[in-house]
Every structure is written in C-alpha cells, then in structure tokens.
Amino acid sequence: MKLRFAPSPTGSLHVGNARLAVANFLFARRSNGTFLLRIDDTDTQRGKKEYEDGIRRDLTWLGLLWDEEARQTERLERYAEVIEHLKATGRLYPCFESELELKYKREQRLRAGKPPIYDRAMLKMTDEQRARAEANGKVPYWRFKLSDSQRQWRDLVMGDCTVKLTAISDPVLVRADGSVLYTLASIIDDIDMGVTHIMRGEDHVTNTGVQLDIAEALGAKPGHFTFAHLPLLLGEDGGKLSKRLGGLALSTLRHDGIEPRALVGYLARLGTSDDPQPAQMDEIIASYDISHVSKSAARFDPTQLLALNRRLLHTLSYQDVKERLPQGATEAFWLAVRGNIDLMSEVSHWWDVINGHVVPPTQPEEREFLSQAQQCLPEDPWDETTWKNWIAALKTETGRKGKKLFMPLRLALTGEDAGPELAVLLPLMGRARVMQRLEEARKS
Image (cartoon, rainbow, N blue to C red; front, side, top):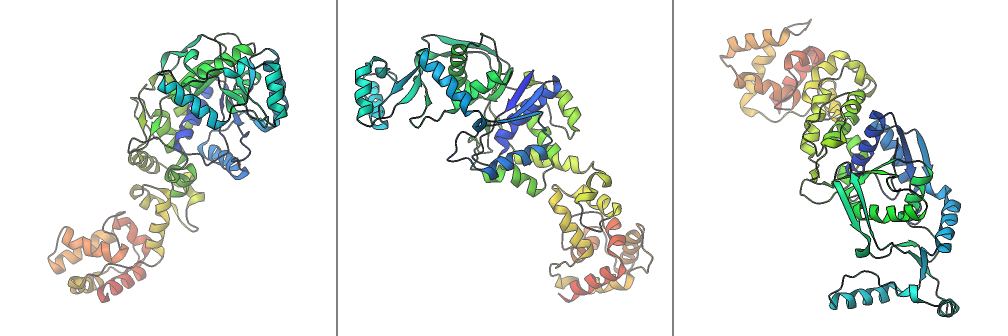
C-alpha cells in the first residue's frame, strides 16, 4: 500500500490541506504502507521555494514524516514522453481556439439549451488547416479525447461513484507553451510511483473520472487505484476554507501555541462521530478508521480545537515542555500554570506575572484593605500554606470573606481576575515582590 500527499508550493498549508495530509499519513501508517510526499511544482509562475520549505516544516511539526519524496519538475522528460505517446495514439489533439472564441461557443450552446461543453470542433481540422493556422503564428494547446463512456469506482468515503465523461469537456492537458497540467502529470506520477490509494477532497470527484480515463489510455487496468474522497472542510461561517484564510495557516496556529498533537487528533476525527482525544501519535494511528468519515461536509471549529489543546496541555509533564519554557522556569512554575492556559504562548505571560512587572487595575476603594494585607503578610520562609495563613489573618483583621476577601489581592498581585491558585503562586513570587505589588496597587 502506498499513499501520497501532493501539495502545490503556491501558498502556505492551512487546516484544509493539513486534514488531507493527516488522513493519508494515518491510513498509510495504520496499514504499514508507504507515505510519499510529492511536491507538485509544475506551476513555476506561482510556486515559490519558501512555500515548499514551509510545507516540509509544517509536516515535520505535525509529526507527519514521509518515507519518500519526489517533485514534478524533476520528471518533465517523463511527461514529454507520455505526451508524445498520447499524441501518437490520437488521444491528444491540437486546439487553436482563443479564450474569446471558447467563451462565444459556450454562450451559443447555452442559448441553444445545450450543456456548455467543448464541441470537439478541432477534431475535424485537416492537416492543411492546421498547417495554415501554424503558418499564421498560432500555437496549439492539446486536449485529451475522453472516451464516450462513464467511470465508476467504490469510494471508501462516498460509496459508489459514477462520472459520465460525455457530460465533461475534453480537458486541456498541455498548454500552448508545452507545459503539462496537473491532471496529466498527477496520474502519470501515481502510476509510475506505485501509488495504490488516493485520498483527496470531494472537489476532485469529477477529476477522478477524467484521470481514470487517462490512466486506462496509459495502460492501467480498472481497479488499479482505490479512492477516498473526503468531504470539503468548511469554516465556522460555512464557507470553504482556502489558502487566503491566514488565521488558519499552520504557521499561524504553531505561532499561537497550538500543540501539533492536538491539531492532528482534531483533524483525524473531524467529520466523524468519534470525539477527538489528546492522544499520542501511535494511539491516533491505531484508532484511525476512514469508514467513520461522514459524507457530509465538516466544519472546522477553532473553539473545539482550543478545548482539545487545553486538555492536552493540562496533561503534559515538565519534561515534555522543559525546552519550550522561559529560561529559568522550574517544574513548580509549570505545574502552577499549566491548568490555566489554552495555548503554550500564554506561558510567557504568567512568567512575567511571577518574575516581572504587572500593572494592576486601579482599586481606590481598596487602599485601606491592601494596607492591612501588607501588615498581615507572613514572614519568610514561604510555602503553599502561606496563602491560607495570610487569608486567615486578613479575615480575622477585616471581617471580609469570599470574593470580597481574595479578589482585590488577586488583582493587585497578578493584574488578572482569574488564573492559577495564589497558594502556589505566592512562594514562586516571593515576599519582597508581593509586598512591592501591594504597595503599587495601594498607591495606584
């Protein structure tokens, strides 16, 4: 078994194509198959090396390590060889119509109540007519002559699929400049590289029918490939995800502090009835089942991802995150704050709260209480009983209790109205810093 993820380096990976990478990787790993990364870089005008480097970086961050790698620009001679074969067998034929002429033809067919598919007029062109067109400076592009039939397959997600080729225009496979289009290059690669299972978005269903016809013209037998077309992934608003949604780019999610395991676990079960779990990669692989994927479109919900990320962070040990914590951060610090963060990027804030400077909100009505808090502040040494003893003394001194007792202290010491327990924060902050903050809050 061999599967491939074949991104085009024309933009950054976002959660939509990451979902396909996850599906291909997990399916391959669970089946002890091969996972191929193929860079579909024939679009040299829009493709950029920085996008290609970003693809590898994002996949590595997710833990989707590939077994083999290929790139289409290294296979141009092979494509040229196949193109000549298809020309010789009459399956590729030259066309000279301009975009304006094709638009006029489509409009005419629509007015006549006919489907706006290509009329194959160029198939009737004689050698003399072609020679005359070329003599006048026209350069042909090449269409593939589809068979007058239909292509059927049993899809692992969509079930029985049928594409009627008679309802589709003969696709352009070679541009006038001789460059090959994705539809042809991709199926040549899939055959040559021994790909057995093709998992991609449902927007490729019609394209699959076309590519099966091309595959047969290249000698592939029916049933050569097994397909799985995943329903489209929608945004919160129900719109299609795209590379333009920078907020859902993997690089952005990584920068924001999303854990890769949380994202993989979420994408693996998105669109299924299975609840995502903050699991290890081997557990995600073992539980992945393509048959659980619904035929209906799924919505990517950042709130659900954030909740899963939070659950995962709360389970991580100090050793799991040690290299990503601020310099000097101890195990006691991590255990104190991990239960109050949604994203790893929030850790630096709590490090500043404990070790740096905070600007407390003004509490003019609490000046006397904060002064009393200073007077009742226990002497060193401090431990996790310090908070309890301090609160007890303040309660006796002021008669306050509940929120009215501890909220002014939390605001003064952390600048926040919620966060880690002050019982564990106080020993980390130390008496001098706590005294200083109470003084600053009292004077603010």
